[in-house]
Every structure is written in C-alpha cells, then in structure tokens.
Image (tube, rainbow, N blue to C red):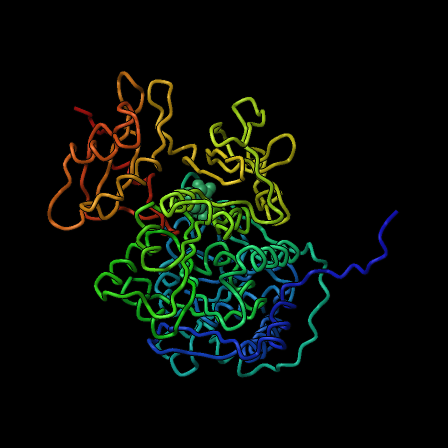
Length: 541
Ligand code: ADP
C-alpha cells in the first residue's frame, strides 16, 4: 500500500525563495576582486537572481544546457548557482587552477554554451581563446563601466542584469533534473564529472543543515574558504540560506593575513576549508597574539587535519570539526562533532585524538569497508579496507564516462572511494590514506597520513608530506619531504625520536628532503603526484 502524500519535486531555487522570505536580514558579504566589500541580504539576492535568470533565457539558454563559471567566491557566483539551475540549465563550475589543457578538456566534454568569468580570469580565457568552441558566449562578471578594459566580443554581467525584468515564473522541473556539474581535479588521468540533481542538492543541503547545524543558523556568519568552483563550496551556498546563516565570501584573498582581517572585521563565527589555508591563518593569529573576535569554529576537510593544527585551534577556544567527503558525494560524508556526553567521558587529550578521526557519517550516507575480495569488514577500529559509500547525494555514474563509471561501483552498487580506512565501533571514520598514496613496504602497508600527522607536530616543521620511493629490496619506502619552520632544519634523529613514540621502527621514513614549499593541487591540497614525479629517481642511501 502506498502512502497518500503529495509528491512535490525538490527544487534548488526554493531554498533562496525561502531564505528571502524568512531570513531576509541575513546577509551575503563579499570581498570583491575590485578590493571593496559588497553586501546585501537574501531578498536582494533573489531579486538579482530573477533578473539573471531572465537574462539567461534571453541569451537562449535552454533546459539541460551547460552554463560554465570561472570565478572566485562572491555574490555574483552565488547568483549564478541559483539562476542557472532555476531555469533548468546546469551550473558547471570550472576550477581556475586546472591546467589549460584540462580546462579545455572539460569545457568541451561538458559541452558548455555560455561561460561566466571573473575579471581576474579573463587572461586565462584570452589564452584559451583559439581553442575554445566557436559559439561559446563569454560573459565577464563586471560592472558596465569597466567593460572598456575587455574585448568587445564579451558580454557584461551587470549590463545583462540591468536590462532584465525581475518577474519570472520558474519552470517546474522534475527533481531528478541535472542542476550542477563539477569535475574532479584529475590527479590521475582526465577529470571526471559529477552531475548533481535538484533532488541530491536539496537533500544534501538538508543533511548539512541538520548534521552541521551547530555551526549554522540565524545570526551566525560562515566563511567558505572552500571555493564555489569546487564541490559547491561543501554545500554552503545552499545550507547557509536555508538556515539563515550569513555568508561571507573572501574573493581571491586566501592568504592568512587577509582571511584574519575579514574574519575579524565581519565577526565571522565559522570558516570552512582545507588544512593548507589554516596553516596561513594560524600563522597570522600567532602574529596578532589573539584569535579573531567572535570566531568559534573551523571545519577542516579535503585532506587530513594534522593533530598539531587541531590542538592549536582548540587551545585558542576555536572548536575543530574534522570532516571528510568527496566531489562524488556532493561532498559531505562524515563530520566530527563530539557530543557533550562523549566529551564528558574523555580527557582533553582523548578528545583531540577523537577529532583526528574524520568524524561520523551524516544522515543519508552509509559507509562500509571491504577487503580485496569485496567482503565487508567489521567496524572495530582495527580492520582496514577500501571505503565504499552509498546515499542520495552520491553519484550513480560519471557524466558521459562509461569506463570510469564501470570501475567505480561494486556489485551491490556502492561507490568505491579509493580511500583506505577503518571505522570504530562507535562509528568514527579513520582515513589511513588514499589507496594510491599508501606505501607498500615488503608486503606491509605504511600510512603516509599517520607519519605526516606526527611530524607536523614538530616545532621545526611548517609543513610536510610523505611519499613512496622505490626500493630494490622492499619495493617501496617512505620519503619525508619537509618545509622548515624558521632557519633550523630538523634532523633525521629528531624526526625518528618523535615518530618512535607512536609508530614502529620499520615504518620510519628512510630519508628527509627539504623544499621551500610543497606543490599544491587545483583544490589546494598537497600534490603527492607532483612530489612523486619530482623524486621519481630518488636513490635511497
Ligand atoms: P580531488 O580529487 O579533486 O582532490 P575531492 O575533494 O573529491 O577532490 O577529494 C576527495 C578525497 O580527499 C577523498 O577521497 C580523500 O582521499 C580526501 N579527503 C577528503 N577529506 C579528508 C579528510 N578529512 N582526511 C583525509 N582525507 C580526506
């Protein structure tokens, strides 16, 4: 027997309409590439989104068309998220840090018909111009007055908005209609597309609001350092309006000093991003001898949050939520809030150790770990295997990529993450490594994340990474790459002494190399691929 309830299609633009009605005093504050602050509320945002949607229709954008963006975090980019999906088109966010070759590949693969570009990225488009599809319409996200700086082949964002009506009847769209497209950063092979739907996006926003809700809410301000051009800024463009949280966008200014100033001036409560950006913020906090006022929480994900980073934030009174997810998961999979009842039972040291885990699953995400034969392993904190996931905001295939799709799912239809993990009996996920980053030493595995986590705690280390280098006897051995903190280089003995407090002798890195900075991927994580290439012929003594 079926239930007798209405079936209303879930629709992304409904989130902003709700925010405009219920949270009209919550703001969207943007540090613009022009250098000044722009602010308006969700009601103003909706008015401009309606105008932009009409402008898109006037440009000939139809349901199912892919409309690309190449932009920083700011109000215009947010408007595009809602207007594009609202008219039934697909918002394809392009990561400006991809190589020219990868960018051309995804523009062609996605079949984009219109491209919205921030002024700072116009030079990228000029460089790609000869190879871009001939009929691609390019719109520069700028004021009418500044268009004289650009080729007259380009349209102007503000001109389009100013000419358009705010009256719109949003089309009814089946909730499974595609709404967003984001390509993985392609650390191996060509980038692969995750095609989000209205349904998956709204369900993810609800999950985020529920499970990460203590960092969001009316009167709160959240700063997504995580970019709108990668995995929907972890869902904040939807979760923030839904909960009435004000959004503070940093534009292109992601260094520690700029973030500190913005967080302090705007009284931001929570900021979300990858560990590398927090290294910069912590350095600035040390310089200023105080945390930004009202700053209560950081959400750290994208790669493992080092223990020393979690400790430093917590000592400042800024709680850390360590989260894990993937482009293919919209992206949130787990989050590390510790409930009061658990905190009470744990010493401060044990609480930090618990926060080094990647947290527990959010509602709607199922986790399992499997061995090489595909058997499920127990969640006992000991057994480790490949992590597989399923849920309503997880891809069911890659966009137009049969081969990648075939390889990604197991027989039961779960998605294989490529991460090696264990899960504790109380549900905490412990990511040991990406399968391709594990170091295979004489038939045993060494976790690069474990070593990095410990080494990051040494005062002479500013940043580090561990990679596998080939070894004639053991097949692979760990090489530690260090960026020094200050002039004095850490010695091998100092590192070994520290590591031996936590790991076995045979897991110690065989050597240390020093670099001025670690190479980063397009999503701001340490690029182990680049390091492996750099040290491909490394000879261990
Ligand atoms: P990309 O492949 O473009 O870097 P993703 O952002 O989708 O894109 O990366 C997802 C991967 O990042 C995960 O599979 C995992 O390996 C890693 N990751 C994400 N969050 C964490 C975390 N908190 N700890 C360890 N690894 C993480």
